[in-house]
Amino acid sequence: MGREYFSLAAVRRMPFTEARSLRARNGASIFLVGLACSFIPFVAPLVGASAMTRLVKSLVPA
Image 1 (cartoon, helix red, strand yellow):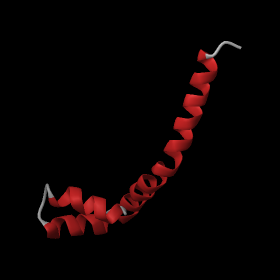
Image 2 (cartoon, rainbow, N blue to C red; image 1 turned 30 degrees about the horizontal axis):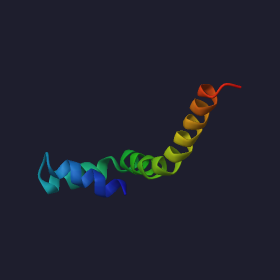
Image 3 (tube, rainbow, N blue to C red; image 1 turned 135 degrees about the vertical axis):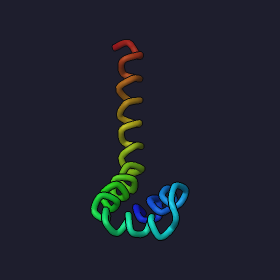
């Protein structure tokens, strides 16, 4: 996933050959950002549900 997103962003700012060599030099960073981007959608609903549960509990009188 990181390679595709990186290529999408890089090709808009530089020629494809430069983007490819930049990707080759920074593979680990691109992999980690891609991993984080794929992990966030699984965590976001949990954080949202937790935040709304706390909000409802604070708005409803005990």
